[in-house]
Each structure stands twice: as structure tokens, then as C-alpha cells.
Image 1 (cartoon, rainbow, N blue to C red):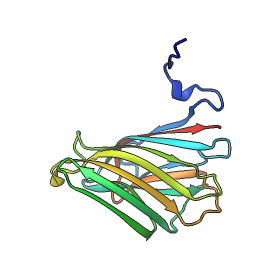
Image 2 (tube, helix red, strand yellow):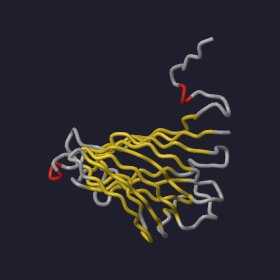
Image 3 (cartoon, rainbow, N blue to C red):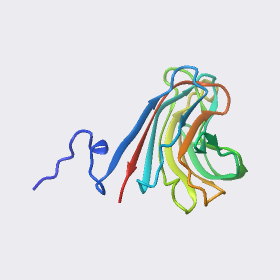
Image 4 (cartoon, helix red, strand yellow):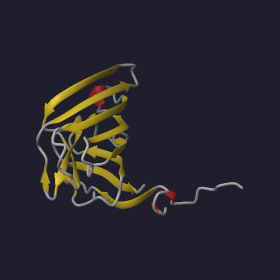
Length: 188
């Protein structure tokens, strides 16, 4: 027989057969952050976070994240490894350690055609490393020649024994102009 993937497959699957949509939130113009409290639990083994049309209200800003415990953002030590390549052929890889933040997209612009879209995977409830792994694409600000940049990263938080039940997205300065985040959970 032929197996057909039905509409809304990610959001309507039984245990062990895919991802279930847990929450969807869109930023309003002027929001300082997108905070998701109590969205992670031991009910799921892996989470997928889809962030679309993430646009700052101030040009040329970095999209950042922090883990949360209840309503408290974790500002301890983040370590990140990244690789990016842009439309002008420039590329770079690197590692940044001992930071209170982790970059998910950089120099994102504010024009209508400029924004960042990414997919991340994590398990912040695990007793192992609290890593957020992802890849995305963003349109940089016009003073960066409005180039398109792909971004691949993994960010690890130094405190491994705490289970995090939330996540916060925000810009390096300024507020959101737009953005939609969907969080999915998968059970084994």
C-alpha cells in the first residue's frame, strides 16, 4: 500500500509517531521578548521549535535566546558553536564561550523583505547537556548589502542538572516588529 501524509501531520499524531503542536504565539509590534513559560515537561522526549518571520524593530540586530525556569531567564554561562555562509560567498565558523546569551541569527534587518526563519531541536528536561541545535536563514540589514545568510548553531548551557521549562527569544537591542514561534513535542 501507499502511505499518505495527511494534512496537519505534525500536529495530530499519536504517541511515538511524530510531533504534536503544543503552542503557537505571534509577536506584536513592540514586544520586548517572546517568553514561553512552562512549555517544556517530561511528557516529551524531544522538542522542535519553528521560528518564522522574526524581525526586529531596530535594524541590524541579533536574535538571542535564554532558557527559563518558571519566569526566570537563565543568564549564566552559554557556550555556542556556529557556522554561517552568506549570499556574497563569505563564511565563518567559530566558538563563543562564557556568554550570558546565545545568538541564533545575526544582523537581521527591518525592511519588509528582511527577517529570520529557523528550526531548532532541544530537550531542556534532560539530565544531559541543555543544547539548542538549529539552522536558519535570515535576510541581513540593508547596510549589510541585504545579503541572505544561513546560520547553523548549537548552544549549550553550563548548568546541566536543572530541567528548564521555558525559553525566551529577544533581540540584542530593541523590540520585535514581527515573529511567530511554534513549539512541537515528540514522545518516543
